[in-house]
Amino acid sequence: MAFNGSRYDIQEFLVCQTVDKTALNDLLAKAEEIVTEKGLDFTSTGLEGDLFQAVVYAHALSGSPLATIEEVTEAAAALEAAIQALENATTPSTSYAITVEDSGNGTVTPSRTRATRGLTVTLTVKPDEGYKLDTITVTDKNGDELNLTDKGNGKYTFAMPASAVTVEASFTKDDTPVDTGLPFTDVKADDWFFEAVK
Image (tube, rainbow, N blue to C red; front, side, top):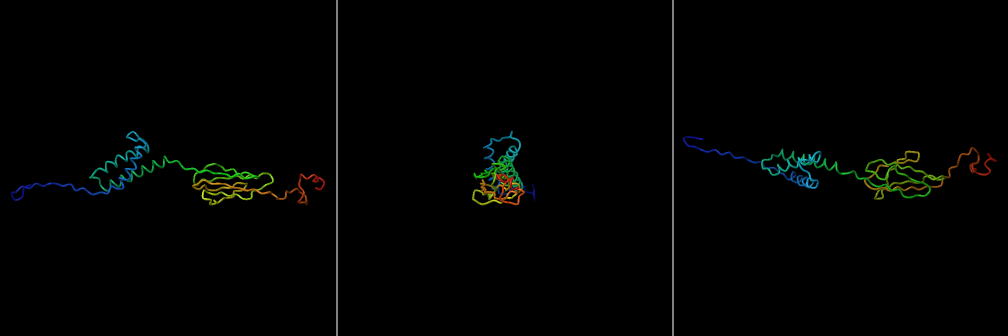
């Protein structure tokens, strides 16, 4: 460029924006561990393929001095979403044991022997002949008693907590008088003198 008879050279300088990549690099380190562990590559498909592609893009931005704040933020969000999606898909739901303590004079049968948290479990109570249910409790691993709902007909329900549970029941003699159609409450239908007094 000439000015007043003199020539000047104009140089252009590229100003790089300083971008904090800490969050991106932390996620990238975690994602790369998953990629190595699962042996993911460009042929991976589905959620695994999504994660691998997110890693490739994030890795390119991590080493680039030209990456913008918007690009780094977007790449970190995509990487985090890919990691979470894969973890949710591969982590099985944890189920917990349901143990019924032995009790004489009756039985308690759970609808399942294991259950995941929040699942409704039904307990079916069946006293032996001549007995009735006295008490029934369900406690978690810490000994805390759970709420039971009496559904009638010997069925009780509870919501499974995030721990194993223990079911305990006790039965007592059923002294409820049997209706024999007689005015005598102490006469049973199988008494030898039933026919004589009815």
